Length: 110
Image (cartoon, rainbow, N blue to C red; front, side, top):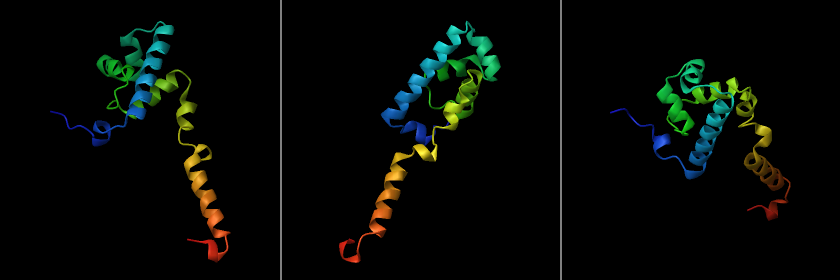
């Protein structure tokens, strides 16, 4: 029996849902291009069963397969921006809190 990646096994609902949506969107894109499952899989250099899993949003499919599918759709730039530091609101908020704490008088610091 293959070993299951713990990150996949314990994936939160939000990213699992996002992957499912990505898979559905990739399938829609393939069908709109009138590509068969077999020909699309060949272009991605994966098997047809793996493509079926990917289109189902299976998190065990390699990120490389998803990235290549985005590239085939000329949408790889979306992946390149996925973790763009300029869009990282949580880190920006932490930077602001840190800057604010450095500029408060010592008597106000906790």
